[in-house]
Amino acid sequence: MRIGLGYDVHRLVEGRDLILGGVKIEYVLGLDGHSDADVLVHAVMDALLGAAALGDIGRHFPDSDESFRGVSSLKLLARVAALLAGEGYEVGSIDATIVAQRPKLAPYMGLMAGNIAGTLGVETGKVNVKATTTEGLGFTGTGEGIAAYAIAGLHPSC
Image (cartoon, rainbow, N blue to C red):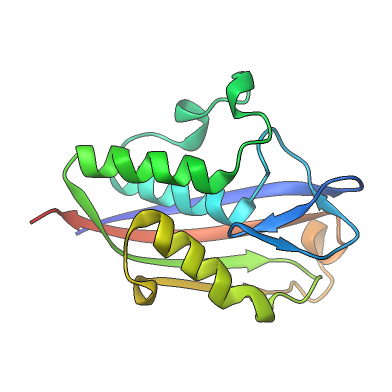
């Protein structure tokens, strides 16, 4: 079993959609970034790439490459899945946490986990997504941004 840790953060801004786990969430602000800025999927990708010792998303999908501007992070996750398969790895499990004071994310957790699992081609039960606040502390607590952490376990393909 190989384990990887991922982390991502993006600033909340006006004029952008809020996309988390491939789900468009109704909110007055969205995450700023080169792609769709989906911090949850970015953290998951980094965890998977780290577990396979394949670098990070910046190495594979640099923000200097215009072909990634506005792209769905789920499309990038599909490319990570292909990289993992090419290296002989299967996803064992993923556990991810979104850190955001608002909006409330509980109604979307199942959809997010389903999107990630579906993109990776694994059972939904292998992907856990949860959210927490910081009780008003730090940049996530003041509503300046959203962060996400993920840990992933990989094992060799059979």
